[in-house]
Image 1: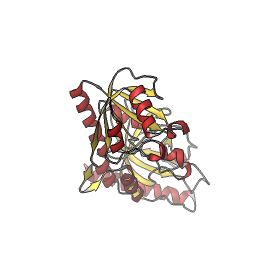
Image 2: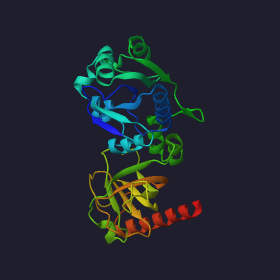
Image 3: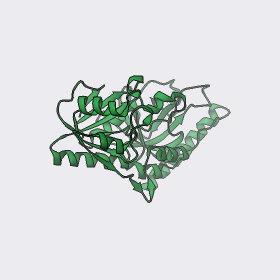
Image 4: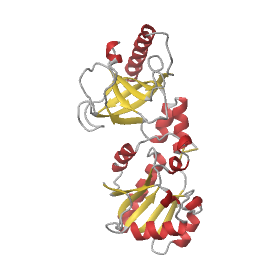
Length: 312
């Protein structure tokens, strides 16, 4: 997949284009990507995607923006699997936000991206003040055609990034997985920690997180990429993970993902791993001392092992 970080002066050739944030690349997004590739093949166009960074809600309300389901790198990794030839990552800034709907169509879709066929959701809004909608896009389209997709539903429920965030916040990992089409996962590079887990007998792989992760607590997890293969290649291992701020040992700490991998003790610093969340065991808690914390970790490990044994 070719990636443009910023809008090109002119795309390499005419494209079939879809537009959106695609946070989570959930089943609704997947339906759009499948339709895009199908139409591009019929029209003999290159399938392309326009997304934005940062998320527009982060630009307009940084302090209250919802947590991302997928950081940019993880989102790009997911998009590659659907046959997208080109992804344009537009820098969402004051200049882009100030474009009128008509200017966005003329300057971005036509002049820069050479769109010949455009796929959006029925509720698509664009341009300054979100003044543009599908009707306006169709009215203004002179050199491209427009298709609008209806919302994708699962068991009568509309699939959306916000619905998935709500499920993760409640600890409903099965519900989130049904909407995503896969277990919810966090991908990241293993970094150095304070080695406390090793001193307690539970060495962990530590992955830094954004300030506001979409879930928190203690989880049974499956980990890919530990053997140095691609993130979803090689042998997957099971374990138990903590997503949180470690209140027993830290004060005002940043969120961290700590993973204790069962029956594994190798140096993996710098390795990029993919952690799938399969079951929530409990919420994160503060304990009186390290002895109580160690006893609880031991109980968490036992509970996670029982879960995996029963799932075989």
